[in-house]
Amino acid sequence: MQRVFPIHMMTPTWVFPAYPLLLTCPFAAHLIDSANVAGHPLSINKTAIALCATATQGTGCLIAFMISAAFIYRLMTQKLPRDMQRPGVFISIGPFAFTAAGIAQLGSRSESIIPDNFLDTPVTADVIRVVSVLVGLWLWGLAMWFFLVSVGSLWKYTRSGHKMPFQMTWWSFVFPNTALVVATETMGDVFNNEGIHLFSAVMTIGLVVVWIVVFVTMVRCLRTRKLLWPPDVHV
Image 1 (cartoon, rainbow, N blue to C red):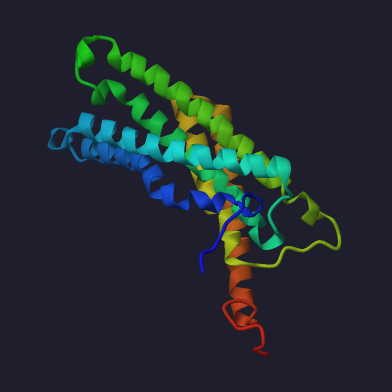
Image 2: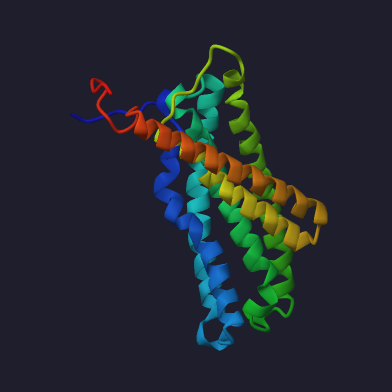
């Protein structure tokens, strides 16, 4: 029987097929940095790696952008996802945060990546650096907006009588926000701004606390057989 997924059931988890593409720019930036630190900058073709990673990252980001547009339409016309799916709203942060971090990281290193007179223009590296930082800044702002929307979707659970049952989707509180922390730290590095660095440090501490809470809750649910056990099994 063929399953149908209507728009009112849509969640940001639909973007998962594009997620492997969204890690290429951060990986390429770290690969280039590692080659430089190891003293073998000429052992890899930095220009080819950076351009291929940007093309792949852009593909994943545009796919995620189209899916996010469908999710925003769902938010405007339907209710928020069900309680067990609510943490998955945070997944919408990841694609744009990963892209912001990766594009800004590569762009800030353009002088060492782009060869002289690339595309027959002597200022190509400078143009790429400025454009990359601006694109990264825009996507970082979009990721922050999705973060605020995701936090706002949890507002009802601050009131008495509302409780969110634990599901493995709780890990969505952690991993997409990791990308946001990395993107924020990258923005601090690019603009050499201590305020953004401090904000990133506060976010990191909060993320560690959330990770501990989710992990402890998961272990407690496993011990009490509320997770990964049939509903008719009694302790």
